[in-house]
Image 1 (cartoon, rainbow, N blue to C red):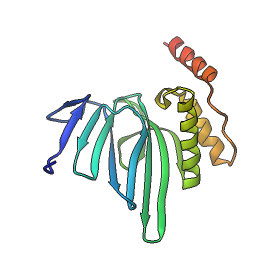
Image 2: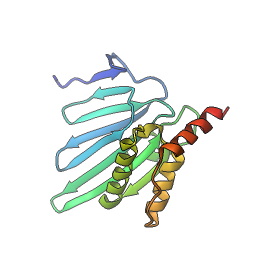
Image 3: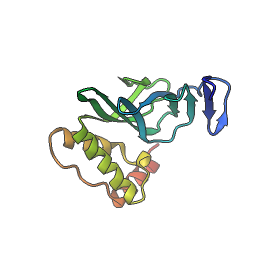
Length: 172
């Protein structure tokens, strides 16, 4: 890379900006200092800024998990996970650092212990063959609420997922 930014839109090199209404997430990776990454989600846009920084974009209504971790000489200073639904043009949204314009926050937890619990829940969902982007938004809210009060969240089951998909298909 020569230092110039490169763009990818759906696998092709694009000369310009992201598609309209794309939610952009700035990712930085400076090992053992700042590590921001996407745990799951299907990006539709990517701009590589340099070896350590890139911007990824998500289409409206897509869901992604954004993890932020930072440390200094004394240890971890930030450990956080947000599961976010990208919003459309006229939808309300909450703001988040490194996410433009923001999104519908389905889960927001801080502290490595909490982040680890969410990562375990994501792993369990993937273990039963379900892509986490397709999980019911209510389940992410459930995990957020239960972990916030120190309770164990319920496990997401294949039956629950089928019911969610049928409900979503029946909506106008």
